[in-house]
Length: 498
Length: 96
Image (cartoon, rainbow over the protein chains, first blue to last red):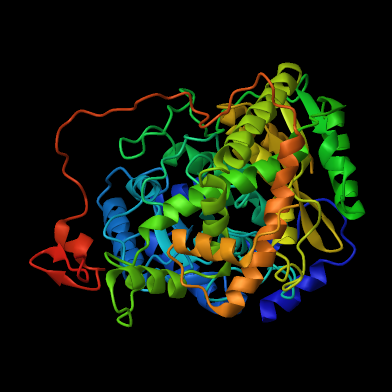
């Protein structure tokens, strides 16, 4: 609380430039942290303790569901031993991180912020977590989310609402709200989130951090609680673009445990030694995202960032993708359909919430699900059942997947003329807690600018480029499928000019 | 405009294995109707000559060698979250 009030003194009057949010997160660049561990200037144990202390001290923001203290300190000791004995250490050695609580991790519970999995202890870890651990990173805590990652504010968490680091009366965005808040508050140098319709980018925008949604298939989802499998991706939330690039480099690539994974760019994603030139980059500003319901303060910040990249030598012009506003309707058919299928496994028999009240097997399913799922999960399960049921399948599900083709084609056309497309990440800055909970549809509309990237499977990133009314504003950049490296390069150029 | 009836909501709840409360039935009837009305804007979109896209990777029939692998989770750990276990198996209520 004290920290928060001190921070506010720095904020008034700022309309652009480096975000005050970075004052809260005082971790050095990830590559520097690792170099310090290697050189013996700090230890993994010190770093983990620093992280845990920050989490405890700022517990009033409700960003964290649980800490993984014993296992984290044990792993830190192992890494410190390696350094002491002069052994080679990983590219993320000693770097603490926070995982959204829908990543299966050892050493504690994995809840998906749901009553259904409240006491669930994962028997194995997500591939993404294993890869980060193999590089020496240490998971210190599990972050809050909208239960099952269904939502845009963390208000759908079955446990508690995370508060925005800039204003405790506002939401951090969602569904990876706990992860974004944790990075903004400096609880760890980076966090993991999942992005099905904008769940990494929207909270990144609301909390003033970098949030990357990679190309669909680039990071294995094995061991992540499945939401909508044809659009789910994993992405990092970080302080800088270079940090996001490094984390992606470690996590990405084919995995036998996820048949949808694709190969990495042979050049990798880490931006060290990159010779990227902004000059000559062709950037399209998406007209449809400027047209409707865009907050004037957000517009001003986005225009400012656009002007600066122009000055830096990019060729910028407006481009129209007329079908883009349909992406949200497409999403709210595909997503619930896949949710209803993915959540069918929670039947109270093998794991998850169960009850002894049932008189027979059938009722034991119904009661476990009625008690274990919150309202949003139930809404999506039933919408999904509706759009997939016989007689409705063609009208809803098949139609949505066909409009999806139309959206993909418009992106392909746009990317034949532009290297990157940009726009705001969200139409507004962080909204008030409770503002949209009464009306599920108005909550869905928060994702209007982010879902299209998921529908098309293309990479997108949100980076902080300024503030409006003391709240962070995120710029969204989209790139063609598999152009994740180029996306990170242009994002770093924007970061340097803002 | 899609207006779901009470019976339609009960049918969906049955299909979804959810035992809704009275309060939920009425609330979901309205909320689900609103959401369906919103997505019905897709009806008007001209999609003639377009095929549906069900996945975006272009990958087809991804296989691995048909050999057992050494996996990180052992049967005992896979059973530890179960409400009832007997002889190393999940125990459920009578099926027949």
